[in-house]
Length: 291
Ligand SMILES: [Zn+2]
Image 1 (cartoon, rainbow, N blue to C red):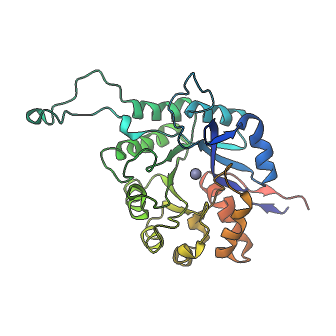
Image 2 (image 1 turned 180 degrees about the vertical axis):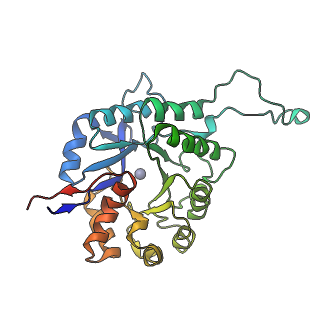
Image 3 (image 1 turned 135 degrees about the horizontal axis):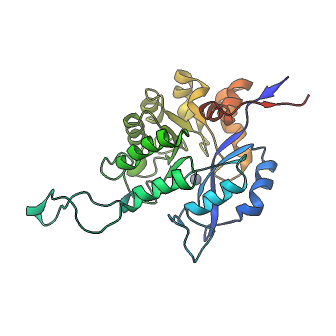
């Protein structure tokens, strides 16, 4: 029987706020079907990030992502978004003569607790990180690494393979390709996707820094100049790449020419980038094709 890899789109923002009014409960499945997507990696809408879904807007927050994943478990892989700055300080840094004294104030470790809740209770599959929106350097060992350390542990506890999608356009000093590669290298058990593959502000560094890091994939979402990552394609082949739409804002049709610019008419390479690589990582089988 003929089979094909599932199309796994790596990038879609859902939720209702000022910049997005895509009601996933009703719109998502028709949208996926129309665009030929078998499985969608989903996360929160930008500018509306919340941990627990607030009363005033039931269409944002990690609970909302989990709700949609629960509605369509065969079609959705949901990721949590967490603000790393909301961790409990471990020690005092003020006043200066008390620097290093263990923290004894009644402050919750909100970021870590939300990560635990997202993975263990909500059943989400990892993190969507936005260093630009939350304003942190992705390789910040104080703010970011404790979250990724805990995610590595949660991967073992949950038995699910985790995915970390990082907004990786290099459009701020917080999310350069170099910093993302350094972070991926520090957590080799997690799979990192550099969303937008450094386009366009990390031209010239994206391939160089990512080639030596096997757990860092270049995600071609809206990377409309894929020649900028051709060195990585030459060195690593199609297994290094994924792609999403950045839906529902952007045109799904743009994925095809982006991927073809790298693969040409190599059909297996094309299918791997469109979803096969993530399917392999998550042990999702090929789909029978009717002839
Ligand atoms: Zn996006």
